[in-house]
Length: 312
Image (cartoon, rainbow, N blue to C red):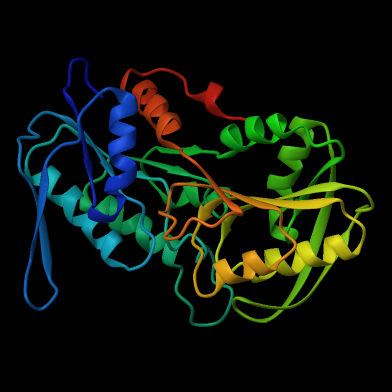
């Protein structure tokens, strides 16, 4: 970012709700864009104000449908062609992050493809939160600011003053994240082991660790169908846990997830607003990431360290 380069915020259509909060927390107004839509479904976004010589932050989570990703790419391309000085893609939720490796023959690595598309479109920097795997940052040849929702969840959990707090990893892949929480909060940790027969369907789950009389908090990067989480919570209660809560950064919440959560033993599901929650149920609590992103954007723009924003 060059000194005195004007800063402007813009947003994709389905992330407008969050972009407005980020811009307000930063102290700016959201820039004006318009999306021209054709009868066949094709669309063309454009800026309704000059971005020449500006540092442009484009805020868009790339949750389904794929139009959200395409709109972000088109906005990046439009800013580049309009002579923006720097273009930063702010992606609170990085879609396709689960496709981070070739786990079966003839499979695509979607996360790498998305990284290539963003670079080809002309992005200079990417800002995101709680990637499915930290190593996804290596897919990019531009700087990546990877934020953690733990800086929001930990203060909330501390405010609950749970007497026998224990952190749980829902599966083996989440042990690093759960271990970071347990070390920071000086608590015990348990690990779940799940057996899948196909994607999004869990056949069985076991937990390694002590559950008796514990107030368990399951931490994960996202909650999708809620099948694993609800199965784990019910099993933990059967094993003698006092209560089970869930901290999941990205509320994908597809299919019958709301109904599963309501019918489960889960006491509370704490999520962020990286993805809009279509229905607010009694068990779901939303913590906004707006102030965190605004603070990090300010530090990045002014060449300041952002390490103080990390708990993990």
